[in-house]
Amino acid sequence: MKKAGNKFSNLPIQTKLVMVYCLTTLLILAVNMFMYRNINGMLHRLDRIYVSNINLNQLSDSLEQVQSSLNNYLNTKTTDAMDGYYKAYQDYTSQIEELSDEVTGNESQRMERNIKQMSMKYLELTDLAIEAKRGRNVEKYRTYSDEADTIYKYISTYINSLNNEQFKSNSANYSVLSVSLRYVEVINTVVFVAVAFSNILLVMMVIRNITKPLKSLSAVADQVAGGNLDVELLEVSSQDEVGVVSNAFNQMIVSIRNYIERLTNSMENERTLKEKELKMETHLKDAQLKYLQAQINPHFLFNTLNAGAQLAMMEDADRTYEYIQNMADFFRYNIKKNHDTVTLREELELIDNYIYILNVRFSGEIHYEKDVDISLENLTIPAMILQPVVENSVNYGIRDITWEGKIELSVYREGNYAYIRIDDNGIGMEPEKIQKIMSSELKEADVNRDSNGIGLDNVIGRLKLFYDRDDVFEISSPGRDQGTQVTIRIPLKEEKEAAYV
Image (cartoon, rainbow, N blue to C red; front, side):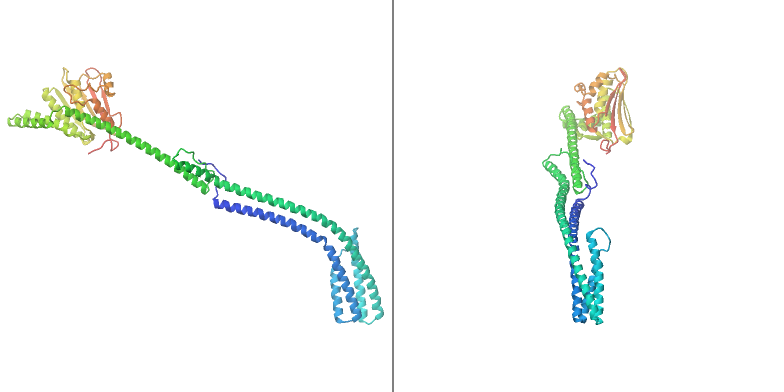
């Protein structure tokens, strides 16, 4: 049975696995990026804590370099000393430009402002000392040099003081950031473990989604392999490869069940047909046996009848010859028709012989008429079904009546059926007797000294078996002394049931 699944369940297994792999990889990558960002941010903040101390140390070094280059030039007055001074001058100038120049209440920023202003004054004095030295004005360059040296010392003191203050503040911040960094590491570790656990759960769910129907399929397949086809059909919740296989397996089980059911029905039908065939063969054998029992040495009888016919012909007894010849044909038909079916024409010829013999016996008391649709003469019917009916009409219909007896036989077509109707104007038949004949309760009543031994019960049974239906034989009688009508209804719709030879 099918059950609607979501879009993910209907995806192919390969696509599912690729999606799960990509999703887990993206989750792990996102967690790693999150952790890297947090830790890297903390490290940058730690680095920035001591940047101010580093800058102040560099500023102090540059200041010292300017002072040293100045003294070197004043003492040596060389080009190299001059170049070293200007280089140190540029480095220090670029560094003091980064110092704060705002007037605020912050102590550190005030000290930076003072350092910047003193540094500018200091650099101005060093330039004047250099110019005086180059102009060989000894008195001036010494004055400028001494003033610059004094400011140098003030600047150095301020830088050291500011550096110490910022170091204390930065140390406190460092401790706080170190603790925060440990917390961030713990949080990142927890997040990473949670994501890893979630990935494991996700993978297990997908694997379970794939393996669960496979296990169900395997369990049902084992039962089917054991011969149990009454298993419950698999519940299909997806349309992936497993779902397709499960649907195909369900269809296979249903097909096998239907095949077994059809095979069982076919075997049952075949058994029923064989039973009917055996019954029909039994009826036919019974009829043939009774015919044989009614004759003593058939070959001797035929030879005797033929000898009588030849003797009558030699004596010019034409009527006697014709009578004996019809007798021989009648008995020859009964003996030779050992097969199940004959043509309607053959049955009608037998009736003609039978009526002729009876009229010779009873001095032409039986008036027989027939109206036959020639197109139906080749219709295949069971052997020996008309003569017993005509015999029954003679013996129980017109045999003992005081008026002229008549038998009418007609063959005609209506729609998809061929009808053989035998009417007599005899004494008729009571409804109770008709009911007993149709229900096979008068098997012995149809047999008397003049009967050939085949009753209506045998005819009715063989017709029902041959055409596999119950509406092939009907007896009707309007009432007392109003005759009897027997109708045989043969279907022409199917070639098997109404064949032409």
